[in-house]
Length: 186
Length: 221
Image (cartoon, rainbow over all chains, first blue to last red; front, side, top):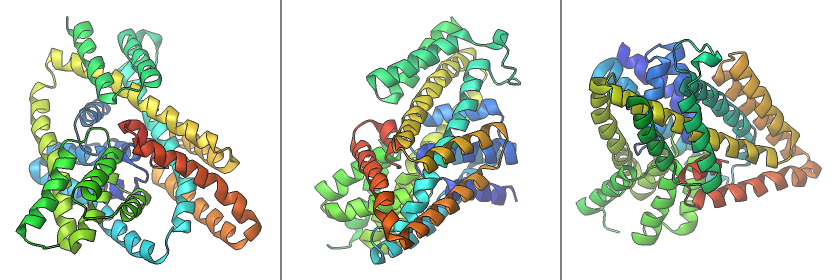
């Protein structure tokens, strides 16, 4: 039954993640931490980090990882299959419609209003990710004594670098990791 | 075109290679697909590829998966779609499987924790950058509805824990309603359509650019 639950949870993620990779983020977070408690916020942060520095869509990476953690390789297969099933169905239906009604103005109309909502949900996820990165994941106290100043510095420097120089994000993430090893481990 | 074993292998192999070496999200892979299937293999012409990309961005789910389904289906029907899906899913599946076993073994190691703590600050920076770019693009449309939807959705999700699927459904229905109403009144039509297309052009230019994550979010517009 756990395989079915995995399949269904990631089916929901696949079905409702409109608008590219990050759109899946809030949905994964809700399914995996909120609805099912398969991961802690700390583990979610780790898998997010891993999937950002490896190739492949976040949703596929997350479904593979969560599947393995919950039920081994069969779990990973079930979760990944769930994640791509809605795509298979909807994309082929849209392709058939598209050839008949070029442009799909209704779909465009829906997406036009859906998009700001998706951006808002990603921003909301980002807020919890940022809180976890800066305050640690133990309890979300938000008291200044829990603030990790090194992480704040890395975040500020990373954001500045991204906005100013627009490098490939992988360099910012790996760079922050290397500095992290120097600051925290040595 | 002859649909022999070599053709099917080439289809699978193309999807596999594109997926394995694409860091930075769906929009990069779409650009690379264009290069491979349109320019190199000449299997699909430019205009049709653009249609396929538009469809893969309109559907839910990972854009890379959607695009590969469409290309596979276009080339060889359901078996073709099956092959390209496998080709696209295999690389991340294998990589994450290997990493997750290492992760479970090394997650409590102090150096690993330090690495993750640092990277998480970097990840937060990258996603915040993406969010700033996306929100700015919505605000730039200069229409009340998108900005209001964005503000309300953010408040509902962050501070009131409203179910996110509910938020998506309500805004989708609102979009359908405005689209249908616009379709009925010709006067509003020109006004209503001018802005989204301006936004879309800007977005697709961005998506075709080489900034992966920036393209990733903005191309979705």
